[in-house]
Image 1 (tube, rainbow, N blue to C red):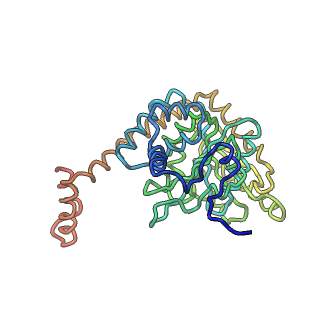
Image 2 (tube, rainbow, N blue to C red):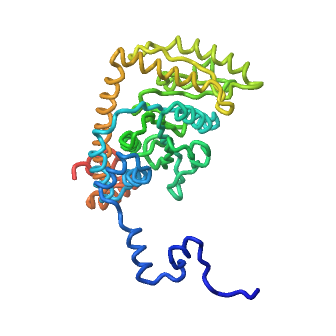
Image 3 (spheres, rainbow, N blue to C red):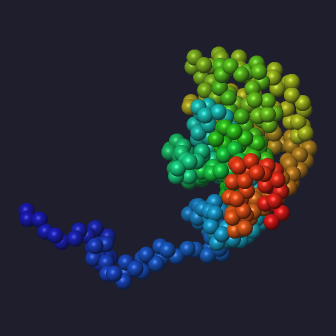
Length: 359
């Protein structure tokens, strides 16, 4: 059969009389480009978010994460409009060293929650590439099943240069997700640096994932993280590792008794699970439910959120002052001079700082 150069038309195109892309007129092409470039208004985005539109939620989060001043202003208006619809979720922080199985656990845990009727948003803070500034780990590719769940939303965000690898605008993103109807927010840290401290200051329940046989049970490992944890979950408690996991549970329980009582009135618990085999996942959720019941009774839950709001108010002020300081043209000019003077030994770092702050 002789080949022709006639453009192929799909059945739908034939039925509707639609020409294939190759035969689009220049005017039509320009019209399509214009529509693509047109950005939804603040009102449209808020309406979309509060009705559960994931595309609009993603667009708003992108605005929140942007450093563009116009985007920042628009994001502020969106967050303000979404506030009345927020604060109706349970916020759970999950941390653990790389290799402990955080992504596998979160996928199993998130799937369990959607299975019992919850809407789950996972905010995974990825380490940033120093070259591209983008996320390295890509949690969407590591949570293949959860990402397909209609009641789940996964948003990996590059940590950038913010404290301990925590994405600069994670807290604002929480508000947007809550306004979109997600009643369970999971925040995954990179598991290194001081990211745990920052995440702890924006969640209701802080979960530490551990492995058996890591050699740190008797030391009560990383005292600061242990003190923050509301529960320690030993993952990969299956097969030949089950015996070691049970032994680790005993040791962690002993270590927890050495720590002072929490203001919440809650005694941290240790649990076992196998995220890979989806065993012990429901036990973790029961632990969280018990915690919420206890802290609601003692009124710690709401007091903690109020304290977190005050903390983030002060943090925001500090970040804004720092940002405005370095954006000043006068500072940009004088900073270089002061650095040269410090390097030449003609002034001290403290004197240079005092001078710059007085400008």
